[in-house]
Image (cartoon, rainbow, N blue to C red):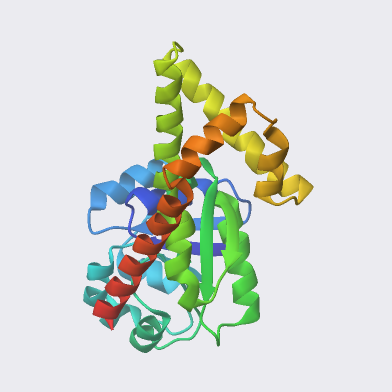
Length: 263
């Protein structure tokens, strides 16, 4: 039986623990400085709330699901357990820092998004260059229990945040904006939101399954002098693509700035 230890039972740690709880031959141990939070999560996941020492002594893989500023308070104790394999959710804490403080190379940074709560996260998986290949496979299997994992080099994490981790909020803004457009045209908000939500899912599925370029598909929808090309004209005049590209750029740069402070 494989034992996962979760240090931190906040929103993301709890969401991930709930997704892997149904797995067979898996034991989950939980620790949080807020003891009641660990006990509450344990009761809903058939996990066990334990002390930090118990968790470290019994776990094969430990998930660091605490805020980055909390980690320095834990390093002295964590670093004593060099046989543990580590999965870190701490934003901005580099593999080099984790390796130095934990005295291990079996470390993988992951970056999920809030859709982990429903098992649909898009997650960046960034292994230490000297991590055990089998551990990397374990980590990918772990991540795929709450969505889809994408292996990236650490240098690409900033771009990932711009394109996915932060851009999910851009997607929410898009959904709301189109839904409000529907309201303006007489549709109830709930119906309008349902329509655009299904439309976005169908667009993503079509792009994925046909392997056609999004612009090629876009062109196919636009009839000469028709309704869709009129909408595309408005997007072009408003600089829609440029706005989206800039939103990715600023989120990515903010990430680089934060990581520079950490160094």
